[in-house]
Image (cartoon, rainbow, N blue to C red; front, side, top):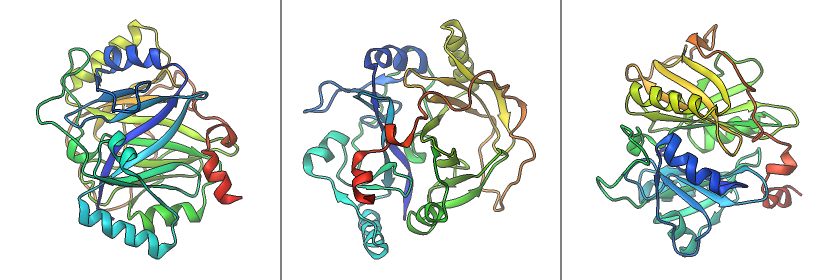
Length: 313
C-alpha cells in the first residue's frame, strides 16, 4: 500500500481542560477549529493540515484511532482492493465522518490486536497557516506524517506481523535493543525515519506507550525540556540519543498518561538497507527516571473498542 505515514491520531480523554492548556503551552501545538457536529472535543495542529490530533470526551484515557494517509485517490482504491482480496473486514466512512476528519474518503478497520485504524486520502490543509501555541520553530510533519507511535499488545503474533507487512505493506525495520518481543515498522513511502509504528509485547496489558514528534531544531527540544522541568511534569527518560537513529530526544508524560518523545534530528535519517541489531538502546543519555509503561497502558478490557470484541465473539 502506498502509505505516506500517520496523518492524524484520535483519543478519548478524561481531562480535556488539561489538554487545552498543555497542548499549546508545553508542546507548542496550535489550536484547530472544531468541525461541525463535534463541539466538545479538542483539536490540535502541528503544521498546515487542518488538524493532527483530536481528543474526544471519554470515561477512560485511551487511543481511539490511528489515521493512515494514502498518497492519493488511486492508491486508496488499490488499498481497498487489497483489503478485499485478503478478507479484511472494514467499514466505509460516511460523509459526516469524512468531514469530521477533514478528508476526502476513509475506511475504518481493526488490527489483530484490537487497535482501530483508518485509511484516508486528501486531508484538508491551508498553506502557511500554522501558528504555534507558544514560541516554537515548528514540527517536521507534512509529507512524512506526524511522527511515530509505539503500542503495547497483550499478544504479539505472526498474524500481527502478517497484517502489517503483507497487507499494510509496511517495511520491517527490526526489533531494536529492547528486551522482549518488539517490532518496528515503517510505511512504504517513508524515507525519513526508521519507523512509523511499533508494537511491544506486554502480556495482559494494552495501550499506547508513546508518540514520537519531530521538531525543527535542537532548540525546540531544549525549550520543551525546560518547560517540562519547570512545570515538574513526570518524565520517562532524560535527553539522549538512540543507537539506531541520529536524533536527540527526551520522553515525558502527557495528561492522558502516555508519553511524548520530543525529537530533534542531528542529521537526516537514511534507509541503511539492512536490519540493525543495536547492543544498547541509546549511545548517551536517556536515563530512565520514570515508568516505561505509563497509566495509558491498561488491561485490554479497558482500552479495546467494544466493536472489536463483538467481531471476535
